[in-house]
Amino acid sequence: MKKFDIKKYLKTIIILCVILVAVVILAVLKPSETDLFKNTSPEMQKMIEQDANSTRKRVTVTYNNLLIINYASLSTSGAKVMSEKYVGFLGKVYPADKGGMKITGQMVNYTYRMLGCGENLMHGAKLTITLTTLTVLFGVLLGTILALGKISKNKILSKISGAYIFFFRGTPLLIQLFVVYFTVPGMFGFAWRDVFSSSDPEAVFKGAFVASVIAFALNSGAYCAEIVRSAIQSIDKGQFEAAKALGMTYRQTMTRIIIPQSVRRMIPNVSNEFIMVLKDASLVFAISLMDITTISKNIMTSEGSYLVFIPALIIYLLITAFFGFVFNKIEKKFSVYE
Image (cartoon, rainbow, N blue to C red; front, side, top):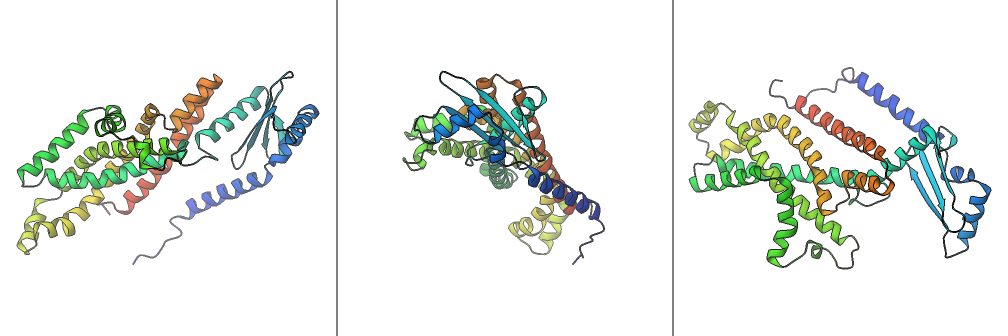
């Protein structure tokens, strides 16, 4: 068993420690929610106090906390309309009604909402990551079965697997999503929300999520099948013959010799499939699921700010970079060339 070589990873460890320390310091220095509200005008504070003792609220308060920076927005309705915004960073509270701080506050607010902070898994980045992970997981499992079916000597099984792959690779994912979400329930007389309790307020969104996972997994399975098939067929045929000479059955040859080697060769292509599904996940806007794209579009429509797409791009890039890094490490660890 190899010993862990700390010198090899020393630079990475130091960088991560520096980043962690910096984040902790910034988080500690960040003004509290109370500090932000203390900086509001006397008139606004008076109205907040009145709202505390009244059932009719005149002040709409928005508070976003992003670990190292926070943002508060207060607006009033009625005869006297007021609006105040503040950004808290590095121990100071800055007015965010205009200029660079206004843009900073908007970015914090948009990012907070797109990440799904304070919401359940049916919102923002959490939904995007969960959908992508489940899709690729089920896609690889289904793809392995289809790949083995396609290269099988059983002609019927091979034809069925080939037809499945041809169909799902030859039709748009968006149409497949519509068929699973609208057509299938219409044909069999059910609704996806019925999978969950009728008293569950999130039943509609959870049902849409289940339909999305099914549609995406069926589609991904077809692409993963070709990844698995090409990886299996890249193994030298001499290994099949050697296994046969040793008296191993076809099943033993595949499970003990061929597939373990194929897995290593699949990793780069599975990584690409993961990134593609991550970006294709934005298609769930068509069935009103609150992923990053849907939320950014809703913000743009309601607030008329095209700046919202900047944090959306950054969030996608960060998620892609993280999983790209993970797959890169896995690839290096299991590389066929090592």
